[in-house]
Length: 318
Image (tube, rainbow, N blue to C red; front, top):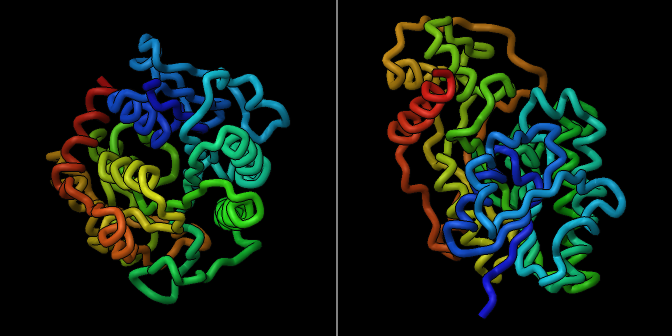
């Protein structure tokens, strides 16, 4: 039997590179497509000597870009992760973010349909906006401002979910949607606007750790290995979703900052700064569907996950 062949769009990014790594470890042949607008070759440098790994510099939103991929032997799985996902990136690249969610999703869906491959869309908890209920179940339709600063990302993913669902209904494409919550771990960028890498970098530098607002807003962290487990469990199932994948322990941002400082052995002080517009007040997934249908739940505790992530940041800075 030939090995499974998978395409990961956005494969040089934070999550995409971990997906490529795990798929290779599981014996798959992997095609990684990335335009490197937010991803980096450093994330995949350790994979490029593997003959089962193929990197192609391509923007999936451009017409014909996916035609350049080495798909002659067919595809079994298309994981669409190409999209700026950090606030610093989608605020800097608003039109590109919308294009990745629209044209990029359409091109990846069409490729999956041609090959009879299973298609998995990386969506986000941001589709819930600033939720009026917590935890957020998949049935919650969200509270999103379509013209707010974050809307380019929120609405790109909401449209991508709609397009993915329509493709399945109209053409029978084998699709699934995963909604990812606050994942953290090695290969995050300290300046991408997300709390955990910013806190870690400041704590390691001995600088004040900056918390937005009064820090009472909540997040639910999930270590990257657990997130990858959930994505691949969904890919291997017949579930269409959407399915929430994320940590279940809702914690204030201020408490997360304190835990980072403590785990890093830092003496950094906590200081408070302006809170970004549209910053969600709460964020916590209802993961009952993932537990019941996929047998998935997070396994890496927050303290262990932070320890691993801080160690990676410390080594990367050495």
